[in-house]
Each structure stands twice: as structure tokens, then as C-alpha cells.
Length: 574
Image (tube, rainbow, N blue to C red; front, side):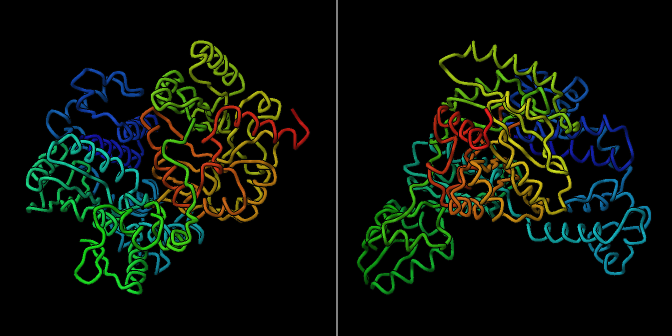
């Protein structure tokens, strides 16, 4: 798939145009095209071959021509000429979270800054404070952005890793030489970022290795042996495959899943019991006690098997020994998605597109939560537009009666003073209301969210901390206050499944369980191809020890309706 490579070109194109002060409409067109292509689950080459590029929203004839040129030649001539007008080194600065093309242009033209090191030195000298619009807060924000970038250190977002790993596993499963295969490492533990992508298999070694290195998405072979191979896939990420003997598959899967802390603790227990544990099996002296499955190993130690997502040595080993592991929410437990954007606001898919995809997932309901009026950048809906959209939902509910329920919702903006972007009269007419912050990310937003939570018509707070992984830290919050208020008022907090959010994160999910807060796991989809990301949110919740009973949308539509009614009754409204 060339999706990522093409999306990167369009993103850089937008950067260059913004740097040069071009028309905002042109810039936005390239940004939107980049986001759409990057998030497609379908191969852009296949869509082009089938003549379906025109079906992609926002991809007009000019962009289609550029896409076809890239697929045909590997480059876009117009882009190659445009790149020559701007020094390449300048754009390394755009990798810094929170630093946009306008800031880069000012740094370059006024201070001659071309690299990260140039920028660090300029900050140390205090040069940035001499620039117009640069105060201490802005300089501190840039410093934090540099720290965030360096901290990420080239790690892969979980959503990217899962997408690649699942694709490879599904492809190799079809091969007759493969007996068992699994993702392992931090991808299997659903950690929010991972290093390399690791896959483990058992079967006919040489045939599996050969099949792996010849997969259609493999771009480069770094190493090929008889039991291991390493490749670079088209997305530019490294994938390692190990082939293990069947009798050691379980012990290898346990070992290579990790985490390091979990494995060290487990080996310590083994030593105390007179065992030795390695990737080859569990041994007493020279005798092999277990190794074919993970369950064999943990059972031999008198333990239940901790789900991979819990294996971080944060109490799961003790819980497994005492047979009190939580009954985690399952990947198949979700009954509906409660945060979806249609093409009525800034989504790229129609409401009916979402309905059809939801039926494929086996969902019983979805909530269409388009943005509210003040968020003009996201084409937020006026009250009149909201009414027209709701009329369409009514028609679709008639069409799909008995198959799925479409809930009328909104992602209503929490304004700077904590008030909401729609009146209570409007919100009262909706089935499910999600409230969210989209501005003033640097200030403490505790009181702002508390005011929203105390509105009787707000059913959930979306992406509560506002973080974007590797790009923006969450805004300052007193999460304890928010958790307590959510529990008291009957307001859910969201686990946003979108791959660069995962907000609430795992530690906050565990905190929510402690305070008795209901969670909703939603995708924040802006295209039907985003709906698969529910898996990422469920994985994050599982890492946070979240059980099915803790998740509102792991239950049926009656539970959703009751949740909404109960909060309104608590506040004395209907």
C-alpha cells in the first residue's frame, strides 16, 4: 500500500504552501486529502485501478490526476519543483509538536534557524523572545514540543503497528505451512507506542520465512535466516518474524510478549519454586514441564493466565496467583459506537455509510455526533442544520428498523467559560450528547469540564485530557475532581479509540474504575474506515483493568436510554 507515502507527500505539500503564504483553501485541500488517504483501510492503488478515486470525498479531478501520476511514476513533478523553492532542512522543524509552518518561516527568516540544534541554541540564548508574538509561554511550549519529539524516539503508534501486524498475520494464516501465528511484543500488550513489530509462528520453518519475505507489502528484506527474518514494509516500519518449534511456542509467546518487568517477576517466582523459565519452556532441572501453550506455563506455577494487556507488573501476577484477575471487557463486547462524525460536519462518510459498516461489525446502535456550531473549522452544525440532519436520521431509522438504531447526537463544544455551544432546549431533543474541549489547551480546564459534567444533558466527555500522542500533552486537569463529579452525576468519560489519541489512556482508565465512573469506548470516526479503531480503545481499556460492566456501550440500547434518563431525572429535567 502506498497510502502512507502519498499522504506524507500531500501533508508536506500543505506545509510548503503554508510556509509560502499560499491560499488557505489550497492548503486545506491537501491537508484533508492527506488525512483521508492515510486513514483509508483500502489500498489506494486498488481504488485507482478500479476507477473509484472519484468516490473519495474531497478528492477532485486535480488531486486524482496527482494521485495517478504518483502511482504511475513514483513521484509528482509539480511537487518536486515546489520542494526546490524551500530548503529541506527547514522542514525538520515541523516534526516538533506544536510548531507550524508560519512559526518555522519566522524562525528561518528572522533568525536563520534551519535545524533542531539551531533552535535549541536560539532558545538557550533567548533569541526567540526577541521575535514578534513570542513570549515565555510560547517558548516554553516549543521546548516541551522538542522534548516530546525526542521522547517519542521513532516509536510507532499502536494503531499503525496493529494495522500492519494484523495484516501480516491474516496473510500468513492462509499459508498451509503455518500451524500457529500471533503478534507479540508491546503490540500484543496494546501499548500506546511500540518499537519494532514482532510476530511469532510455528510450522514449516523455511516455507514460512519464504512466504513472509515475499508478502506483497514487503519493501525491503533486512535479514533472512532459517528461523528468523526481518523486513521493512511499505509503511516504512520494521517487522520481525520468528519461527519456533511447536513444543516451545507457548513459552516463546510468553517470553516475547513481555513486558520485561513482568517476565523478571515471573522468573523470580520460578526460581523460588525450583523452576527455570526461558523462551524454550519451563524446566525443573533438565525436565521440561511446560511450553506448548502459555496456559501450561502459568498453570504449572499455580496461576491463572494474565491477559497480555495486563502484563506490566502492576499487580497482575499477584492477582493471577490469587485467582482474582478481572473479567476484562472483550474485543467482541462492544454493541455500538457513540462518537461518529458524518459528512454533515467534518466527516467524509454519509450517515448511511456508517449504518452499513456498523451492521458489518454487528452493532445494534450508533450515535451520529457531528460538531456544534462554534467549531467552524470542523463545519459545525447550526441549529437549523442539526434539525435537517436529524430528519435524515429519522428517515434512516425507518429504513433500518429492527436492524440497528441510529441515535441523534452531537459533539457539543465546551466553550471557554464552561457553557455549551447549544442551548439546553436543543440538547434535550438529542439521544446522546458528547461534550468536548477544542480550544485553549494550555490552560487548566478542570472547571470548564466540571461545568459541562453538571449539565443534565451531557452524557459523556470526549477525549477528556486533550492529549495527542507524540504531538500534544494533555491540558492541566484535576482528574480526581473530574472522576468524582462524573461518578456522582452519572456522566461517562470517553476512551477515544482514534489511533493518535487513546484518551483516556490506560492509567486513567484504571483510575476511572476505582472511582466507579462509567466509560464509553468510541472511535471519533470521520470516515467509515476509522471504525476498526474500536480495537485500539478496547485494548487501552483492557490495559486499564476495565471490565464489561464498566463500559456503557458494551451493553444494549436499553442500557444507553436508561443512562440518559437517569441523569436527567437526577437533575429534575426530562
